[in-house]
Structures are given as C-alpha cells and as structure tokens.
Length: 374
Ligand SMILES: *Cc1c(COP(=O)(O)O)cnc(C)c1O
Image 1 (tube, helix red, strand yellow):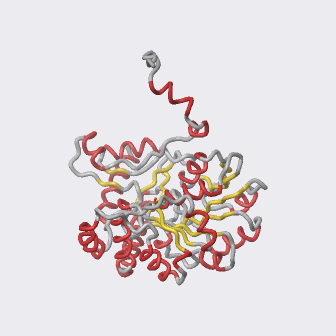
Image 2: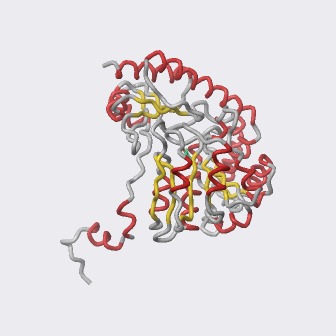
Image 3: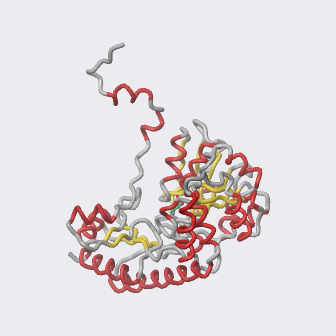
C-alpha cells in the first residue's frame, strides 16, 4: 500500500489524539543554567527558578549512591519495601500507609488516573501548582478554580463554594506554590468539615519541612480520623533529590491500594530508593537546611523591605515578589545571570525567587535592584 506523501505525519496523527489533550498547555520548567549561559554568553549563572535545595542532599546520600552504582543492572524492588518501611516508621505509620512515586508529579497523575473520568470535577486553588490541572485534563475532567484572596492568602469559603455534586478530588497545597502562603490546621479542619465526606482531598505538602510557623497542618491527624485525605510529600525539595525523582503519599492503606493499581511496576528506580533511605537517616541535615532556608527568607525580607518592594510572606523555600511586570523583570535579571521564574497564570506582576545560598541571594537581590530601578 502506498503512502500519500502529500500528507505530513502530523496531519495523519492529529485526528487520532484524544481530544482533551489539545487544551493542555505544556509545562514550562525553570530554565537550565547551561541554556542561559550559552544564550547570553555568561560564565556565572545562578538558578533560583525551580525551588531546588541549593546545598544539595546529605553527604550520606552521595556515599550510599556510590555503593549502589554496582547494582544498577538489577531491577529495583518494585514494592520499595525497605523505603516504604523507613518512611512509615518516620511518621509512625504502617508501610501499607505509604505509596511511592516517580516524583510527586507522578502521584498527581496517578490520582487523576485512579479517580477521574470525563465530566468529573477537580477543585484546585488558583493560582497554585499547574500539575493538578494538567493531570486532570489528561483524563478529560473539568477543572474548577477556587481563587485565593487578593493578598494571595487562601480563601477557604471560596474553596468550599467550589465543591459540587460532581467533585471527586480537591487539591490543597500548603505552603502553596507559587505564592508561599499557607493554611493553618484549623482552616483545613474547617474545610474538611464543610464538604461531603466522600471527596478525595489531596494535601500537597511538598514544602512542609520548611515550615517554621507555629501551626502547621497535621495531615496525619485527618488520615487517622478515617477521612479520605492524602498527604503528598517529596524528596525533591528539602531532601535535595530533585534529579532522582521520588515522591510519596500517606493515607489509608485500602485507599492507597486503589491508586497502586495504576502504578507502573518499577516506578521508583534503584538510585532513588537508595538515596532516599540515606536521606531519611540524616535528619540533622534536614534541620540544617531548614535553618539555612529560614535565614535566607529573612535575608529577602530585610532587603526587599529596604528596597520598598512588596512580597508575600512565605513558609516555603521560595518567595513571590511583586515587581510590576514579572516577565520583563525575569528577562532583565536573566541577562544579568540570575534565573528566576515568572509567567504564572494570574500573577503577571510577580516573579518567584527560590531561596538560594546567602551569596546567591545577594547576587539575586543586586540584580533585582538594578533592573527594578532601571
Ligand atoms: C516541587 C513540587 C512538588 C514536587 O514535585 P516532584 O515531582 O516530587 O519533584 C509537588 N508539589 C508542588 C506544589 C511542588 O512545588
């Protein structure tokens, strides 16, 4: 059979693509250092764009990885037995209450695949993490955005009002990315009490370990009460393992068993499992990073106050700064060798800056001062 050479491949394939995919905007990640170096001919570029841990993981992780390199021709333990046991014991849970994933991103996708069909509704805060919506849209679900307040704090009443009889899944992100604003335990309790008890509530706590406020959400309490609540955690942030991809969910074992049905058999690789076990064993390192990050937040608060630039108080490892024209400032800072993030839906006035080392923060603040005053 001949091929009609007049028709390009894209035109043959497009009609086969599931319709809901066409509406999904591709994820735009923070720009890699190497890209910015070559584009602007710069030698020294600072990346404060992806909320990475600038100090890296525990030295114990690096040692454990070197040892594990000898075993990469073997498949990983698909059930991640040792890792789930270690995570469970850290939280005082049974291993069955832990499900691991290739980054939290995969967990979000798995939740969508487990629960969502065409016409189902997913409630997300807005602005918040874009992956909640794209995961749901892949399945053809409808996104219902519950706006934050004007000051970018959570509006719990708006979240409650967004629930309908078609709602299957709700995301709460605290501290919220990209705003840095957070929920209190009592706010989450109030929300859970107001909504029907047969809706899945995913509490994304990617930045929980950075929280130093007095009332962080105690998500395990809600799980122990028998509510359909999940706590999503990651090794990408305070544990410094973004490049290895490892996240997990805590929840009711039988609830997690449903999600486990859509998990790929070997979704978490050997190196990620090894690294995470070593990372968990070094909580001193975690405490050190939390302390350094807290100092970094104060460094930004002080400098931004002096510059008269407004920002959102943050409990995370990033800060959302009101610069007037986010994309213009992003671009100008990039030319000075500092990569931040802008272009978040609904936040055109802002740039999001990840907290770096003291020197990186200083460099960033100098660049910001130079371009904002220009
Ligand atoms: C960074 C981040 C995650 C973690 O994603 P990984 O896939 O684990 O790297 C999850 N949720 C939010 C809101 C984040 O900002």
